[in-house]
Amino acid sequence: MRNGRIGVFVVAVLAGAGGAFAHGGATGIVKERMDAMSEIGGKMKAVGRMLKGGSYDPGVAVEAGNVIAGHGGKALTDLFPEGSLQPQSEASPAIWSNWTTFRQYAGDLKSSALVLKTMAEQGADRQALAGAFGDLAGTCKACHQEFRVRK
Ligand code: HEC
Image (tube, rainbow, N blue to C red; front, top):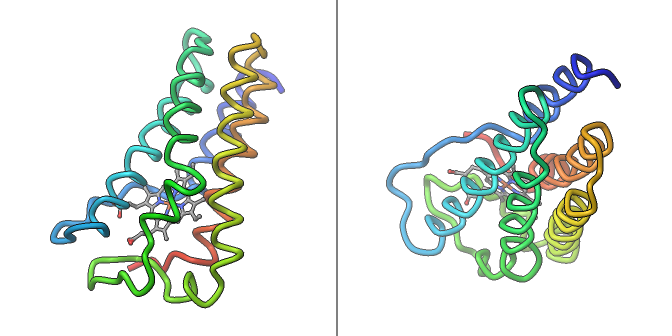
């Protein structure tokens, strides 16, 4: 992939991962998970911008991988206690009828974020890092498709 191609790829990946929407009015744990998701989204954008052009700085991916991994796995599932829905929430009730799959996606988010971080630490080049970034974004997309209802 040449840099121009990586740019096209990154834009497509970010579109698939799902844009950032601030949801006013949510409270408590629902607000907490929206804030966590927004932070995750912001980190993905930062990596996307870095990969797309300008100077190649793997440190951006190390930092993002760290933060996103910290929001993955149990940290994420803990923000979804059974039935925690508010009008502003885009969480699908299917989360609680299909908890095993939801938990699996939360685990995938964490492990893919750690892969991105480790690769960046080990000096992966732009193209290799774009691949790991695409895999990570795939976990956002998979979970959103199944468990997020766009309002
Ligand atoms: C395990 C499932 C899961 C994974 C993985 C996941 N998300 Fe989400 N995401 C959700 C759910 C569910 C919501 C809706 C939460 C709500 O509104 O209560 C959401 C909401 C969001 C929002 C909107 C936040 C807001 O302010 O309402 C953004 C942005 C977002 N996710 C980005 C991402 C990105 C980027 C990734 C991947 C790096 C990701 N998510 C991975 C389940 C997931």
